[in-house]
Image 1: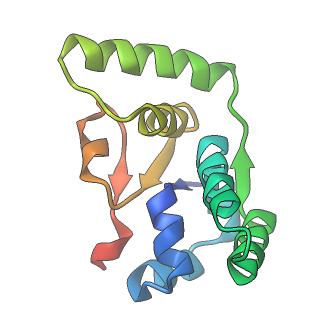
Image 2 (image 1 turned 90 degrees about the vertical axis):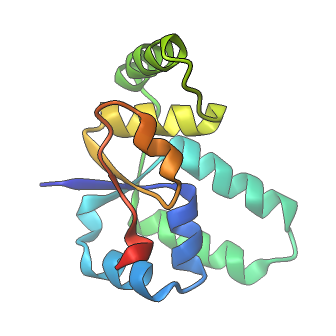
Length: 133
């Protein structure tokens, strides 16, 4: 089964009820969706900055109950080293957390669902932008 790893911006679009993203997520079996623990950390950071956002806390908690959060493991660690070294040799860089998420998606053999075109620079990473219908 193909797995789809939701990037932070894909989760944000879903929470904000983006019609195309919401439709795609709802049409995909929950067992095919996952998040990187790095994305989970970004979501927790966002919530920590807005402790008064009770509805948002509930929505994210519900999402995390339903979608697998993949732990950062040795395979992801090794993939990260290779991806970062390869990109550095080519003078290509991503933000630190984006680099971790890209490596995690590669290690998990997942398609990364994101609106961030910068991920397209990562060799071998399959990327889909679900905001485009």
